[in-house]
Amino acid sequence: MRTLIVAMAGALALAALAPATAADQTVNITAAGFVPAAVTINAGDSITWRNADAAAHQVRFGQAPCNLTIPAGASASCTFRAGGSFSYRDPTQPGTFRGSVTVTGPRTSVTLQSSRRTVPYSVASNLSGVISSQATGETVTVSGQECGKTAFTRVGAATTTAGGNWTLAVKPTINTLFRARWRTTDSTTIQVQVMPAIRLGRVGSRFTVRITAAQAFTGKLVAFQRYRPTLRRWVTVKRVTLGAATTPTAGTFVTSARFRARIRRGQRLRVMLPQGQAGTCYLAAPSNVLRVR
Image (cartoon, rainbow, N blue to C red; front, top):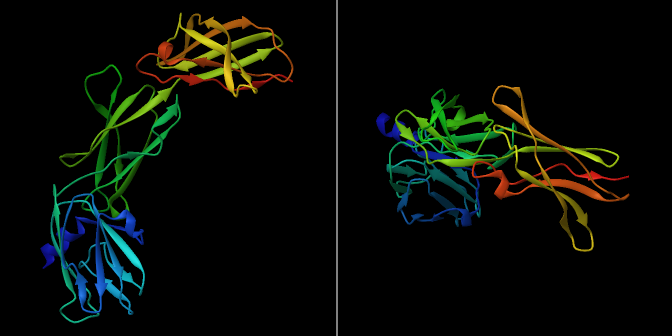
């Protein structure tokens, strides 16, 4: 029994009071018991218990986090993150209130998601996930494969907290694939894409543009644009060739250019690095917007 409880704790995660439409399977709680009593799902899927009885009911998987108390007319759901067979019951009711869940899939897993899939250069994205055992104090290692490279390298590590959740802030400097590993199990990969940081400055009719990234953009073209309210879009006024780059810190390049342009009061101005000039390892990116006053 103790082994069963430990196994159940490693396979379930509570998604408290999620709407029934978010679940892959639904179990109705009636005055006679759970319907259907046996359910089969895939790892990562969820089940919603919908209480159709006039009394409150419980769903208990031993000591697992997926232990629910559901008032009459309410619903609650659990997400099953690892494979196995698990039994549950309602301890407040007679022996007929029993059910089982069969989960198809690996018995261990670690998930990975990102708070931001697109970030400006030097801005952090929070990677996070959950391990299937839901244990506290486990180590999850995160690796990254930068654009243009063929191998993953260690980025950092996180320690799981309550429910097996983990989080790690990363600052990719170029488009990067990330992967999480818990023990010997790898997550799926996700990509976080990076936009170069572009700053447009102005003194009178003189402008400066500075692009900060992990590579130089010398010789690339940026579009100097003004906003046309009547067209509701940005229109290119001229194209500017970027000049030499400096390296204020190791691994960081600042590519700049100076140019002149005729402007009028009230105009909104920016520069745009198009995708064709950004290349395959960066996203197209706009600068800040200047308003001529």
